[in-house]
Amino acid sequence: MEQLASDVLDACRAKGWTLATAESCTGGMVVAALTQISGSSDVVDRGYVTYSNAAKMQMINVKGNTLGEYGAVSEPVAKEMADGALEASHTDISVSITGIAGPGPSEHKPEGRVCFGLAVKGQKTQTQTVEFGPLGRENVRLESAQFALNLILNAAK
Image (cartoon, rainbow, N blue to C red; front, side, top):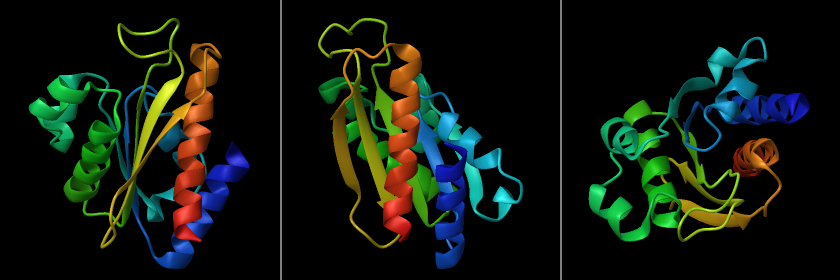
């Protein structure tokens, strides 16, 4: 993951972009991978770890009615997380991650379902759901972090 994170930083530097993350099930793994690399501070502005619904609402302006209608693991919430992180941080790009890492499913959603949001200043926010399946908590989190880094990398190319 170190090479991927380094590539993300280089691609963002080439565009003159700064970035923010809004992470739930990954608990800050994306921003940790990026900030592990020396010199990342010219790109990485901040990372929001919004594990609880209250944190999502307080820190990055996810709406309570969106959480109530769709649940935390949903594309509408991933979109509001990405948009909220972009707006609060005044960065150029943000990525959001919200999912069921496991073990086991939630009441209505399977283990390994992860929703992503990607917000780029001046563009329409993109969302995507990936079904990683019951890989186990550690692997779902790792796959999700790598997927999010790839989303940023592809947007910055």
